Amino acid sequence: MRQPACRIVWIRDSPKVDSYLGLEYSIRKLEQHQKDSLVFLGKVGVGIDKESLEQGGYADYGLVFLLLDDEDEYEGDTVALPETDCVRIRFRGSHGDAPDRYRELIWYTAEQGLDITGFSREIALIDEGLTSDPAQFVTEICIPVR
Image (cartoon, rainbow, N blue to C red; front, side):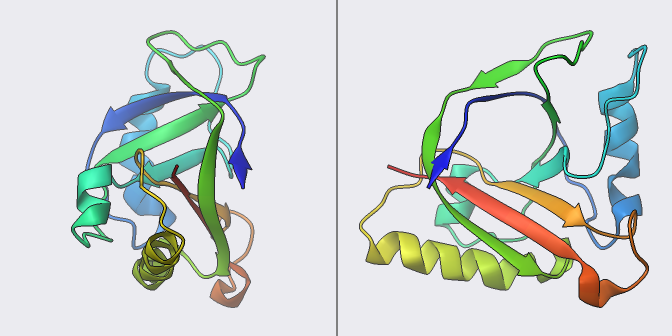
């Protein structure tokens, strides 16, 4: 699948992802000095670097990022990520359920002879911000490959 080019802002951090509140400190750091709030469900994510993915560190989150829309004005450094091929999975569950899904993606990547080229992008699409029913949570993981 193709991951479209995007613009992000990110910080190195090791958040607790057991609930959306675990990301609160990192989100506040990303929003610091911004005139408008840019944080909305589906725009905040966590990532695992390439080396940790290759070594099986499927809970070793090392960064928190914010996806920026074209019209978003962010005071500070941003990173433009190019369009890339990726493996992707959406599943019912939250960040705490992700390690098993990473195993599936890494197995699939190896089976297809693909190489991981960057950090994972894991985003909650439906979480406590929309529903109190964990059975309705949806999370997406995307790993760039070639």
